[in-house]
Image (cartoon, rainbow, N blue to C red; front, side, top):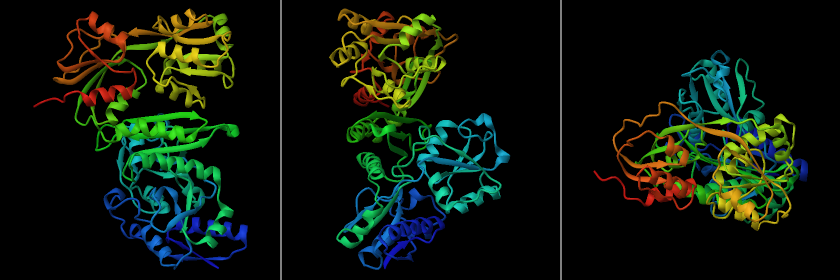
Length: 543
C-alpha cells in the first residue's frame, strides 16, 4: 500500500483521492490518505502574498516526503515553486482539467452591460490572486476589488452572505468538487482576457527523486501533452523570476490537429498603478522558441525600468493599446492624447473577391487584421489555410488571437522590412499577395513588392479621420512626448506642452515632426520594446 499525503481541505482531499484512485486503477496498488496541516491552512486572516505565497501549502508535505512518512503528495501545480525542492521531483502530471477562471456571483447584482464581468457598477469582487485582480481591473475600473481568503466553498458562502457580490475562482476547482452553486450564478471567463496562472488546472504529483518504485507507479497516470504545456508555462514564470505575487498569466495549448502550439502570456502593472497588461499571443511549431520570445519581451518590463517616468503618448484613437500597456507595465505614468479615429471603408465586391482569393496576406496593423476577418466572415470565406505575413508583434498577436500563425521579420522595422521578409520566403513568385490596409498607406511595402515583380492585391478597408476638439493635457511638463504615427502628428493641436524629450515611433513620424519644427529622437524599431529601451536610456527628469 502506498501512502498519499494531502492537505485537509475539500479540494485537496478530492484531488488526492482522484489521483490515488487513478493509480490504483492503472496499477492495482492500493492507497491510503494521510492528512497533513500546512502553514497556509493555519493563516486565514492575511493576503497570501504578505505571508509567503508559494510554499505556504507545500512545505509540510515536502518534509513528510523526505522523512518517508508519505510516498507522494498531490498539489495544484500552480501552487508549486518552479524549482524542485532538494531530493524531490514531479513523478507525474495527470491530464489537465479546464484551465479558465470563473466569476461566481449573486444574480441580484447581475448587469449584462458589464460585458465579460456581468456585474452592476461598483460591486465588491473578491480574489486572493494579484493576476485575477489586475485582469478584472483592466476590464472594469469601477469594481471594488478586495482580498478574500478561505477554501472554494467558503468563498462561495461569502457571496451568499453578502460579504462580496462576486468572487473569481478556477473552473478546475469547481469541477473537481462538483460544488453546487445554489442561489448563485456563474460566468465562464475567456482565457485571452483572464490568462490563467502557469499550471492552472493541472495537478503535480510530488515524490522522492530516488524512489523508483513510486516513480514507476506514477508513470501510469502521466500525460505528456499536459506536462509539455505546463512546463512551458512554468518556464515563462521562471524566466521572469516571478512568484505568486507577480501578476502574471501563462497558458500553452496544442493547436487543433496537434500541429504546433499557441502560447499566451500576460504581465500586468503592479504597485497600485492604473491597470494595464502586456499580452504575448503567438502560435508556432516550437514551444521552446515561443517561451524564449515571451520571456525576452516581458523580462525587460518586469523590472519596471520606467518607474516614475511621465510620458504623454500622442496616437490615433482606437489604436491597439500595446504601446501604452508596455510603458505602463514598465512603470511609466502614461497620459494618452488621441488625435484620429479609424473608420471602416466598404470596398467594391469585386475588389473583395480578389483580395479574399489570395493565398497569402501582408498585414501592417491589428486594425487591418480585424477588418480582413470581418469581411471574410461576412462572405463566409475560411482563411484558415492561407499564409500570413505580419509587420510586427502587435499584428502577429492579433492573428494569434484567431489561432493563425504569422510569419514576422526577425527585425521588425516597418513595411520595407516586411516586404523583404516576403521576398526572402518560399512564397511562390507568381502567388498573389493580399494587402488589406488603410486609405493612403505608407508606400514602402507596396513599392518594394511591385518593384520585385510581385502581384499585390491592395484594398483599403479603413480610413483615418481627425478627431475634433483635441487638446493637450493640463499636467505640467513631461519626461517624454511620444508621437506614434504621421497622422497623429498632423492631427495634434498646436503648441505642445514642455517635455524633456520628443520621441518618434519610426522615421516617417520623425519627418512629420520635423515639418512641424520639432526635433525628435527616433526609436530603433517601430515597436513597443524599442520605445521602452529608448526611454529607459534617456536621462530622467531632474528635480
